Image (cartoon, rainbow, N blue to C red; front, top):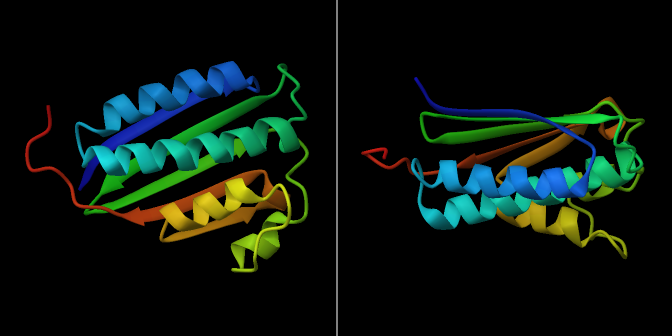
Length: 138
């Protein structure tokens, strides 16, 4: 049973990503421990930054869609941009190689997710994280 869903579409602007991440954390902490909300915000912030800077090349006419849902203790997220894709180094980090200089965001993503990957030349980023749901939401 799906407990939580969060879907937003933003322009490829870092200021809009910042606002979205703050909203996500605030809403998500009603369903999971605040530390999980913080970790998820970091993951989404890094993925959004990569999408906006590398995929959309900071072009505000491009968009990024964030979709997260929580079901049966599994938090699943997808961030998709309509840009040209991320830089090629992302595949190496996704497979567990040490990040290159400037790749600290992907290292952080690896630390705070149980699984993540890229599709369509990096235009789609997905992640999963096992979490303990709160019994009462409010």
